[in-house]
Length: 577
Image (cartoon, rainbow, N blue to C red):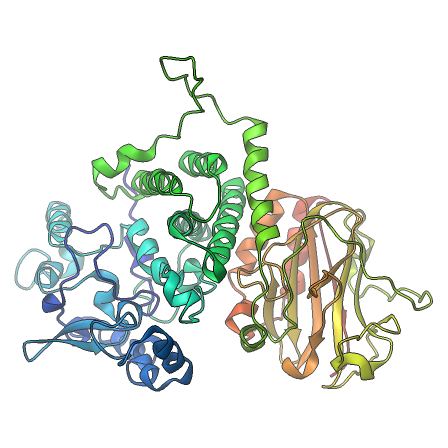
């Protein structure tokens, strides 16, 4: 049965995609001479185009070439003109078309950046069966024929969810080693396709929870594929380390998504990744990425009926186990065992251990917390507190009696506040910040957590005006970790320093911040519900708090806690601002 998924992908923000050298998994290559421009789309999608004109991707059309950071990157790359149709910049930041018969940048990221150049297909797209026939009057037969024709003419249609995910992610990952290592360009951004797809330019109703789950699953699988392709050709430096981190995180996210909504193709992708060696310069990763791509397409095809190229789908087979040197015939493949799953886990752990710190200037610009080096290979002991024991602060929530998960959760600050801005803030020990404390903008604190059981941790910041901000998990390493797993009876501090001890949140960088929520769960079902909640809240990677009110946030947490039957607990700590 074909499920109509088109309404979801018509909701895609025009500013989440971008021009590329070729339409991804469409039938035609990018042809600048066939770009018609956003004004042509605006004849029917006037409201959408009006919103698009106010987005960052279109505003970059005028502002990017004047940006100091962009100029610095261009200089290092030997690019004389940022706003040149053949410059590297044009591939992701502009739409390259034709003006007066010459190849020219015509706009920022636009409609055709997502749907492919429209000259060949725009008339077919608007034809619902003849003159005067509206879209709602189109017959099923005509619609099916129109869709087939649009495929042939190269339009990237809404049913092609994999094509959309790949089209957007290949720029948000920035798979260009020279651009990152030499030019100093950021190695991608924290990109949630499900969140971006529910933005301002939306033609239909918002997607359901189930549809967003599926969208996330496709997005994680596609990010895994593209990160492995980048890692396969990487030589080293920040680029290789970031791609290793992205691939590992995408695999972890896919596992979590598959736990909440099992899918046989997602399971195959996880198995394929578990057999692959995540290592820079490992060219065998290309074959793994091909199989991941094929299974992702099959996953989409099963749900939407989108007709992917059969030749591409043939690569979906999971690689066979290593053949014996004495065998003349390949051994039959066996199902993935606990050992294989353990192997996949080692890959993820290795990626965590290999993660390097982001530069101080970059972290300061995006997260406003102290940058730090990667976690060590083995867990390091928590910093020694030389101060005398202090009474624990009273838990402020109704679920304080929930047993089993949170042994201790505190906001701790240097015993001498004057040490907040020094290199040795914990010289005299730490003290617990209480609800009555009013530290002021020159204050600082660290989040301290002691879990009773191994679990997943979610951290949120709340501001005095009710805004929320998701601190963990994230993919930008804002707290010097992208992963939200914590181990039983091991004290964890966020953010971390280079020695994995307590780093600091400087309050001057977070005006209005006055509450921190900690949520722990060891249930995949509760984790899936937390992931849905996270999609409504802006990440710290976006460098701003969510505009949505925090009113009712504790009630939502309580619902998840009640449903978890003792496998989720949350607490909040606050202070005065």
